[in-house]
Length: 332
Ligand SMILES: *[C@@H]1O[C@H](CO)[C@@H](O)[C@H](O)[C@H]1NC(C)=O
Image (cartoon, rainbow, N blue to C red; front, side):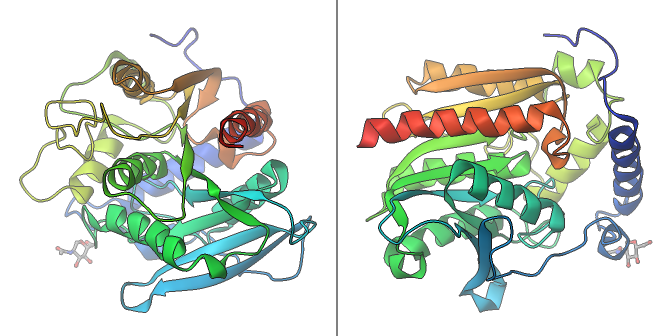
């Protein structure tokens, strides 16, 4: 499981942007465990919700719990008729559990792309962040948004069909989606039926170092110093990376055999240090008798989908679309 060449082939603009993001992120991470949010906001500009259709998508924000700033941004394809039966995608953004939000331009653009291209209602969850809020705040927020919509289906547009729901996320958001999937398959939901999980370069880890982590310690964004810092910010004091939140297939993992865990598609990239963990997650799903599919983009770096100009971003959208159609045909 090694990268074939030492460097991804990327347009210079993407290379530059990724380098700047990496440098900035490294400066914002402080050795005393705090994060310089003010400095990071230079690269994390926000977009307001917009009820007017732009490129076929309208958006609005909805509060779930004001006291912990739990809310979601709802994206609706503006061409959909009220009699349509659109899938609902619960989206969990990435950012190592520490940065970005449902109104970050980066994620607003990505969710708009998903809404338009997948012809789906997208619920982008604004969960609490580390290091101010540790495990399990993020997972509680994720589950609570599902439960809120489960009990208040009327907040969604009439075109939304909650019998065809998907959980989706990238990086830390895909870690979150996994834990939400485990919890709702244990606890059960009322009207919401989760039929699939879209896991884009999920952030998992553990005490041991995998080959891809060691070999790719110098690729953009993710390094061992990066992941170690962010896991420490997430986990309760005194835990190590074999905590069930991080090492979902390790010694403390919650087993899913016998649970109604959704059919899953896992996306990996050849230049992502977390690739070995992601592949092991996929293998663990299969061993746990779950339906799972693995798609690897050999030239992709971690967070490649931040860049719509990369060919893998379009491929991702079309392969997610195909996966969703397949899962929905099993429901109907
Ligand atoms: C951590 O370091 C920053 C910058 O040096 C400082 O402003 C902050 O007060 C420190 N926080 C703690 C909890 O030590």
